[in-house]
Length: 72
Image (tube, rainbow, N blue to C red; front, side, top):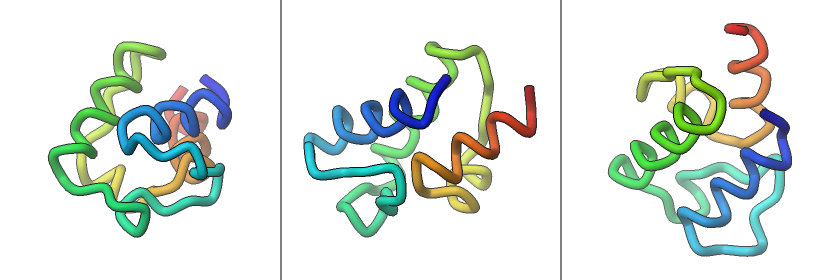
């Protein structure tokens, strides 16, 4: 999974095309319910199961990419 793919997941779930790789999910309007949709999309796309704490620690596409890369 690439940073661009993660950015697209954020854009789709938040319905905001202005999101980029360093956009904070929660600052851009995300909440815990939408975060679970992001985590589910990541699990479907690349088979990596992250938990909510991982997402809180890495709330941008770039940070999530680094987190996923460290796990694979």
